Image (tube, rainbow, N blue to C red; front, side):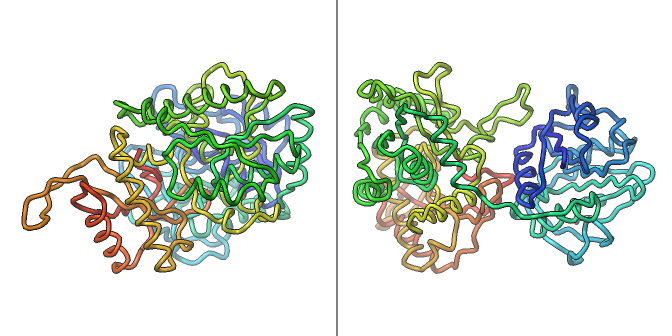
Length: 507
């Protein structure tokens, strides 16, 4: 068993997932309870997660230094490594920031980097760096900006890495974690498989003889969640699609034509386009947008639930990537990034109890669940689409005219990537109405219109992402069509920022 100390990292749960995927049990604990739980559980190894704090700021989470004297192998990741160096009297300072991909140059291949090449791509996200090693430590890898990107204390089996091996875009991250488990902690690994039948049984047991109203969007997450519930409770499930007008072009047609067969029942469609645009009028703050949309969704579902007196649950396709970024500070130390309409927009008191069978799963796992359920591949591998839809892809106020512009621009992006056989080679593609105007020339006259940004990324679990190197000729066609066909647009730009430091969406 591995004990994972969570210092508030957005990817702490992802570390646990990577370890569990290798068939090793993980227990996640708060820093203040770490020593107590180590003595109680006697783990074979300890992992310290990253976190949003700096080790020397007031109130920064810490651990009892006695942990370092227990003889149990330790791997500190990002903040976990900085804290280790700080507590053991190394030097930690702000500066030498690294956000996104960088090249790790390895000097020592004897244990944690066993079998890796001399140079490998890793993902970093830090503004604080270890400048001087504690006594007994030696450097085992560096980057172009950070001398001690990885270090170890051989006799005490303590390792620290400044990058994030749990992130999908760290090329050999899984191998690094596996080396820590097998070569340092001497744990045998047995890759774990998803047990879909156990998920279905759990839903059936939890729901009992009550009914479930499903928040159904037609996207992968809600489709898989809906299929699980339909298999578990049959006609006790009431799938509902609220047509907000904020979804991608063609969504409502797919809901009507494809999903009755998939779920074994008709999807009730509620037209609420006017209500959403009315509520969003004058709203420019991204957080308020999400919460406004979330509240209206719940109001409409609770209104519909009055028609079914035995409805007790509201199904949502919330995944862990949605959930973790919507958590706030408090006992949970993870930083609040943005509210998710399923999470951050919920009222404190709800009449319906939430049912979220995918809450602790990631997009790639959700797709594997969909395959096990034998859902159509075009449903499983469709691009993720945010619950608040185009509202968070329109920077500033969502007006009828700007929404029409965004829907049309987004449709052009999708159509051109499909035409060039690139649509299924990327994780997500979309347009953004940036809210910024730029001067252009149309018909030999000055034209002052909005700038549209393109965002096309690769990812696996939505916790990290990289921009796609789309061929120039495809970008040129997209740009030409948007400027020519979408009213009020003067310019198109391409976003080449990774996540981190950016998020997927602009808002």
